[in-house]
Structures are given as structure tokens and as C-alpha cells.
Amino acid sequence: MTIKQNTLAREFSLSGKGLHTGVQVNMTFKPAPENHGIKFQRVDLENQPTLEADANLVIDTSRGTVIGKGDARLSTIEHAMAALTGMDLDNVLIEIDNEEVPILDGSSKPFVEAIEKTGVEEQNAEREYFEITEKIVYKDAETGAEIIALPDSEYNLNVMISFNSSVLNNQFAVLEKMSDFKSEIAACRTFVFVRELEFLLQNNLVKGGDLDNAIVIMDKDISQEELNRLADLFNHEHVEVKKEQGILNNLDLQFENECARHKLLDIVGDLSLAGRRIKGRIIATKPGHKVNTEFAKLLKKEIRKFDIEKEIPRYDCSQKPLMSVNDIKTFLPHRFPFLLVDKIVEIKDNYIVGVKNVTANEPFFQGHFPDEPIMPGVLLIEAMAQCGGLYVLHDKKEKYSTYFIRVDNVKFRQKVVPGDTLLFKVELVSPIRRGIANMKGTTYIGDKIVAEGDFMAQIVKA
Image (tube, rainbow, N blue to C red; front, side, top):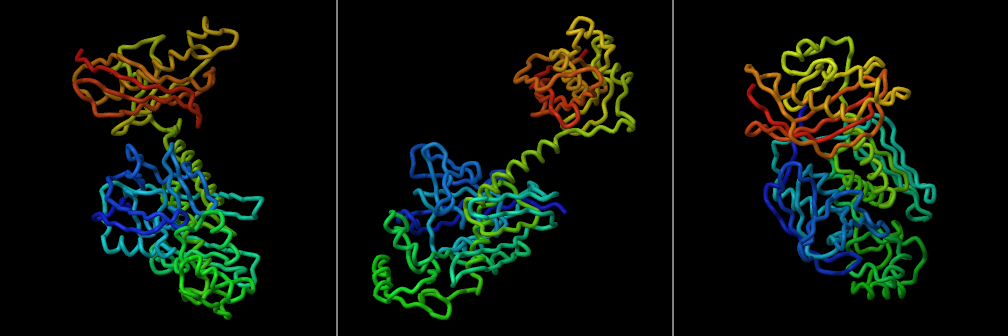
């Protein structure tokens, strides 16, 4: 089943204070084109720099997830990112005029409600997924935090939190399908232990904090006088402790395990920085922004490996070729010893795959390192060029020739020796215009890239 990408039906704006900076922040969420992804634009800075929602841009996780690039930074992005994922959005541009996403009520609910009111619009491009096919583990030895990804047909999460607290010890939360995010997770607020509040204030943090945008956990005895003093520091009316729950009485828990559900919300937001939708089960123990974003970086590496492997052509030597060497001769003028493609095994709309079996009898080995035979790199370039020529000529009814007029970005990554089977994949990188074709060629031995380069060819009627 093909699933399409989504963007917003129209733009919307939200305003509020940053949790730690206390600054007033205005955000505008805008529709974005296909394959744009989620990006933040600091419209208050010179040249209005853009920050991609990318785990590799994470620069701090001490009190939220902070991304940065150059002189631009943006903090506390996790609740907005969780809402975008939970509401099934792929492409959004978020304009923001300060350095921190507003905390609002401490959850994803305000973002979710605004998205729901605005609407989601389906786009034409297909959404890409990263499907977990084998166990992936990240563990922080210092804290004991651990995240495991396991194969599953959907994206779902199991989260266990554990604190050295008589009030908040072990809690567990589950999200079986992302379509339940709005009802089960979005409204769950961040939480803080009362012992942390004064420390945060003394260290110039939580300037925009309000006792109403966090669950305050009362895990130690504290006098009403001290509570009143803390309330005054936050410019809040005086509050008392709900003895049976161990939290301040300024709000009611929405779920008995709201704290664990909020940690799950954070994971959804932080793992979205991997840059691709996940199909798999995430099991997290004692998660936090550091371990979350480190796991997102690990996922990015796995996604990169998957993308590279997906590009590698597969060759079945028992399969009948699309072109034998005799067929190739009808399209190319090259002959022994300069015909360097033995057969063509695949031709698609935008690429071709050719094969060459390298033997010790190749004529160039007589003079090129005869005591340590290595195929000359220039001949790998020529072989890729010949494959490119076959791609542009294979469907021509009249006689044409190709002349390569430019080669760029050539890299040789591994030597080629007798016994190697070379696979050449040559892709068209832009439509052919006025008889000019731009192509990218890659040479593989098995799963390894041995050479690559960019080619420009001119197609001329013979």
C-alpha cells in the first residue's frame, strides 16, 4: 500500500513564552512542498537561517532538545516535533522569531489542536519509511538508559521510566499505533521534581516556567511556607500538595501514568530527528533527550546504510541478459581490446546496469602492473561511459553515437584485480535536452563501491 506525504492545508500561528529563556515567541507553521521535511526558520536573525529537524544538528540536551547551525540555535523543539509526527505531517516550514519554542501548557496538545483545526493535505510524493529489520540497541552506560528497536509492521512504542522517588518510581506507557497519539499522548505534560525548581531558577533557567505548564512532583516533605515562597518565585498563587498523589494541587493528572506518557511523547519528537518515518517497535528504558537523540543519530546511520544498499544493483548470473556482447556491438563502435562491457542485465527509466568479468587475460595487464595486476582506473571510467552510451542509445531506431565531453568528480575507492565481477550502474540525473545527457556512474564489486564519477555526453546522429 502506497502512503503519500502530507503537509498543512494552510498556515497557522502560535505564541507563548520559552520555558527556559522566558522570551516571548511567535511561531508560524506553513505548508511546504514535497520532500521538504520539517524545517525551522529563525526569521529574527540576519539572512533568516534555516535549521533542519535533524539529529546531527543537536547541540544540547540538558533541559530539552536544542539544535544549532552556525550562529543560529533553537531549543525545546521536541513537543512541536512530536505533534507533527503524531498528526502525520511530513513537510512543514516553521517560522520562529526567537531562540526557543514556546512551552505553552507543557505538552503537544496546543500544536495538535491547531493542526487539527487547520487541516492536513495529502501530496503526490510517496512517503519513505525506514523499516527495522533487525535489533538495534543504544545504551548509556552512565545512566542505564537504553533504547531498543525491533521489527514490527507499524511504529509503536513501549516506555518505562524509573526515578529514585517514593512518589514517582516505575511507570510504563504504551502507544500501539501513531493514530492514537492525539487521544493517548498529546495532552501529557512535562514534569519536574520540586527539589529541581529552585536550582533551575538559580541557574538562570525556567524563566518562562509556570506551575501550570508542568506537573510538579512532591517527593519530599516541604513546609507550606516553603511552597508559598516557591509559588511567589513563579508569580503564582499559593498551592498545596495533593497528599494522595504527591503532586501540587494546581492541576489534575489526565492519566495515572501521565509522566511516562510524556516521556513517550518526548521520544516521538526526538526520534523524528532521524528524518524518516519508522516501521518498528521502540522499547525505551529510563529515556531522556540525550539517549533519545543519540539513538536518532544511530537510526540516521542505519538509514544511510539502507539507502546505499538499496542503490546497489543485484546480479543473478543465471539470468538471461537484456543485451549480450553481440547485441552491445550493434549499438557501440568499440571492439577488442576496448569493448569493456560484457552484458547489460537491467534497463529502467533512469538507469542501466552492465557487467564486466575481469580476467588475467585482459590485454592491459601486460603493461599495467604485470606482477601485481590492477585494472587501470581510466578504463573503469571508460566502461561506465560505455554503459551510459548504451543507456541513451538502446531505444534509438536510427543510428546514433555518443561522445563524452566532460567527466567530473571521479573517485577510485578500491583496486580491481583479475577475478572481480564489476557491476556498472549509470543513472540519468536530468532529462536529456538538445542531445546532451548528464549521468552519474558507479562501479561496484559486490556491495562495495570501487569507482564513481559524473559524465556529460553528446548524442550525435551517425
